[in-house]
Length: 183
Image (cartoon, rainbow, N blue to C red; front, top):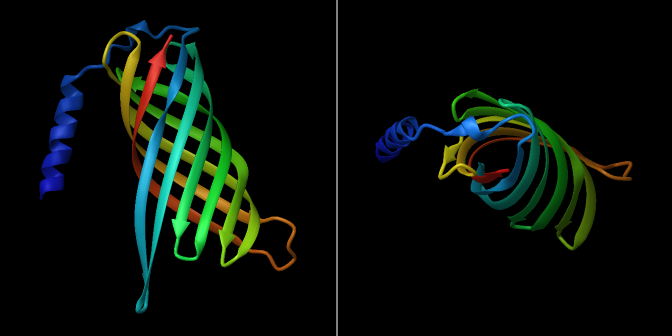
């Protein structure tokens, strides 16, 4: 119930804080990023596995019109799980479209590499990722915005150079908070 009241308060606050994005014109540059943290527990029978994930996602973009920008970003992530760690770097070109005032939709596609260190083994993995989300730019002044967003992401992993390698995929729904500067 407490989460429900938090959600209502958040929606109310973002509705009142109308984005002042009239300063975004064709030719405006955008730079910033977001941080995502998650801690998940998977239960399989009598066993439980806890994974901790941290991601730093810098991004830059250029507005081709007052409502549409092409973006280029990266995702630097680290994960800890019971048998080891995984570190990944993914490059993600994409686009952002402002739908109404500060409300935006974004989409990105990425390719990258992940190194998994588990059980005294090191595995190299190719990574293909795509994501889409919706968020809101809350402008603190003409050029700086805080951006809460709800992001759906799909990651597909494929082991490099092993005939008996593995493929794996994961789907994530994350809430993130970003920071952007518009110049």
